[in-house]
Length: 240
Image (cartoon, rainbow, N blue to C red):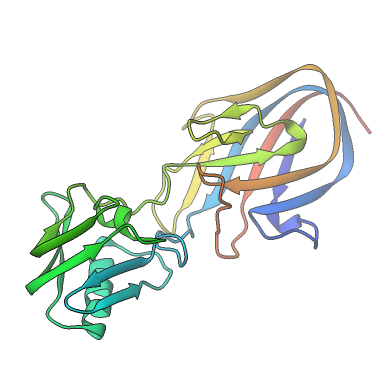
């Protein structure tokens, strides 16, 4: 049998659309395996998040710090926002992106320092390393920019088991590749992905599900209030 799950149907006590419980209209009994048939997740996540990766500290004679507002930025809008914020507390800063090298450069007409070691630093999206830079008028990130928050999302459903594991130690039920861009629907099914099936040594029964959609570090994904859905297939002998 198939079970369609929409986060909109979560219990009122649920934390939100990506951390919720759902009570099934009937019990699903005596199943020995379960497969993920389809997932539909709107790409409404932010790539810059307040308190996660939005801070930049710098010094041109005075210690300064800026916080980029949460939102979904292109590299050009992000560079423009950072330049504006830096010049609102100081002056002479230019933040630019080279589309040939995919790298960001932060410059001034005078010597200044950058610190990417502070808490919640924006180093990774800009292609820098987690380090302090001093003694120059210009700094270019050694790496390409990385604005995607994660290349994969993970579904945890405690009643179905979270026996799979990634290299950060996260335990999960299903892995969801992020294949769409911002504003689109990330649709994963057997046609464009791979079969994800869990087989159990003995039969199981459930009457509710506890679902979390998380990043690879275990932090809950925010879809900013938007709902999502998935379709599960149970190998079930009996239903009542």
